[in-house]
Image (tube, rainbow, N blue to C red):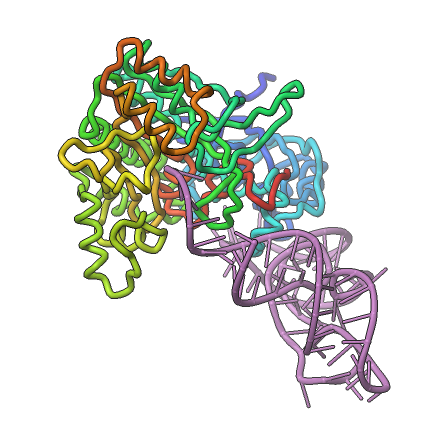
Length: 434
RNA sequence: UCCCCGGUAGCUCAAUGGUAGAGCAUGCGGCUGUUAACCGCAGGGUUGUAGGUUCGAGCCCUACCCGGGGAGCCA
């Protein structure tokens, strides 16, 4: 007797009429006397398996009857197209084995609160919604790498241990580095600039850390950031790059993760609307928009607060690029606008549907004397930035780049409320485990 | 750091200052078409912690602990 081939649930449509073996976990079960309906999940999908008492070995029938949610199971049976079954396919089980019968799995089909679910994040990932989200996240990561690879960018990793602040603004996590102080990176940008001078077009993609005590649905203390940096690029060039990338990400997610988006009950029409061109507003234009809005408390000259960003992004049906902020509210390394020296050549991209800022970028100051003066004006020590100043001493060129927050982008594309669900094991102010 | 909300069974929640409850989950039994809750039975509690007020506190007061949402800051 030959063993029926092992396959996965996502490939069942290719096996209708054949006998196959599936390996997975019991997702849900409902028993009707001499009949068990066992929903099996295997990481690629969920399928209903039917066990008739008279058609399977007695031990298997009893074992499945005593198996609770998340019991590990191997089942062999006939693949049938079955309109009565959720998903359209069904397994008519002939044989199989319960590897481990589980009782008392903590996460039930009932509602749960965020504290409980996050304490059980290692198990929560098995839930349908989290499974769908992680697959959307994966598609976004893959699409990012493909986008840059196809455009000739080189992936250069920036260090996670850094000797000092990159921007000097946010709070950093301090670590003991062989009895020296070191910090976890909050941005790979300065290293990205060095790499761009070596390779032309580069991107860094890795974890970043912010020790700010933020407790909002938009913040994590550890998140993944993509940072392209392009030699000879102007602000307009990277605004175009950001727009092209976001359009591509939306299309890739729609193309590769449609069932997952449907499981998340995502309004697909909102994703289909993410096409070029995106609205582009100068800071002054955005300020004028806020001035006309009755609920805004915005004062000209300030940075936009979270409620301001929501008003701006809700005024459009796709991401908005806001550029040329007053330089006082932005970082020292941003180049000033020659057309208006009060402004910095920078851009923020606000995701649609009020998810806040998903991209922040700028053209970098490329003049040695100007940059040095800016560092000193910002009351930063010069010594740690000497290597960065070298980039302006030896073959300085105009260059630009931006940073994209992965979890915020996934939350935006997937249409979820909180960035914590966009991270497999989110790190927040009050949450370090599991 | 600041503002608001919460903490009662494994989970989600009830309970005028007067005997702590339900649903789900779990266990056992029944049912050949179930689709988040089929029918029956059963077990399950130091009401976040420490004080205080009261004849009597899950409920009122104080402090602390732990969460959640938001501000600031950012992606």
